[in-house]
Length: 291
Image 1 (cartoon, rainbow, N blue to C red):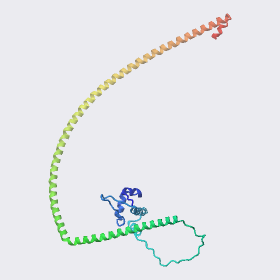
Image 2 (image 1 turned 30 degrees about the vertical axis):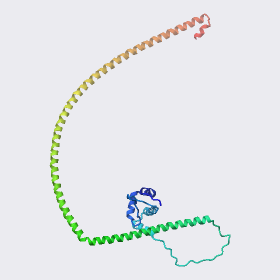
Image 3 (image 1 turned 120 degrees about the vertical axis):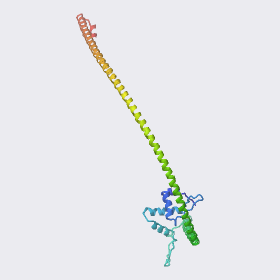
Image 4 (image 1 turned 90 degrees about the vertical axis):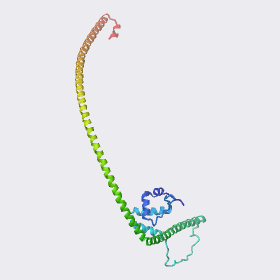
């Protein structure tokens, strides 16, 4: 028979392991999960079927009592009662109406029915054995508990009273010790607090002195920065003036160059026109190359 762990069962039925453990506590009369020597739970297909039934009932918001009743009905053996004997009808059937059934099909059906019957018998037998073992164990445990209670009532009461007296005495001593330790702790705490207060006062004085010196340094550095900024501004203004003067000079020089270039172009064009006129007056064709 195949067995499963708690993790495998929770994955198989899609339920958290904590809920499965809670169902085992709530329905302990029906879910008797065996364990290994190390204490790990072992589940079989029977327990998985019961957990699936519980899940279906829990999904439709059934109460715990209703789920117990349904599980109890599932475990009750089914008894078929026949109040009246069935009537046997004798009817002649023709050979053509009879469908032939092969031997293999009949054997398969018989084997399936046999296995189903064995599975139901196994379930019912295991449930009956579990119920019997539980009832016997409960009776024996109850009887033993009753005997122990009747025998040890006086002894139990006396031992409880002695233990209570001893516990009260021990509690008083522990309270006294705690009070002493608390007094010592308060003294130590007061001394440490005073020490901390003195340290804080010294640190605050040193901090104020450092802050005063830092403020002086900041004032000096700010004055130096202002002076440096003024010098930088003066240099920038002088540079901008020099750049503007140079720009005016370069603009004038560029205009002069443009004027000279235009004058040279006019002179060249006049020379070219005169050269054409002279060439045309002599009736020479080679001057057309310049047109």
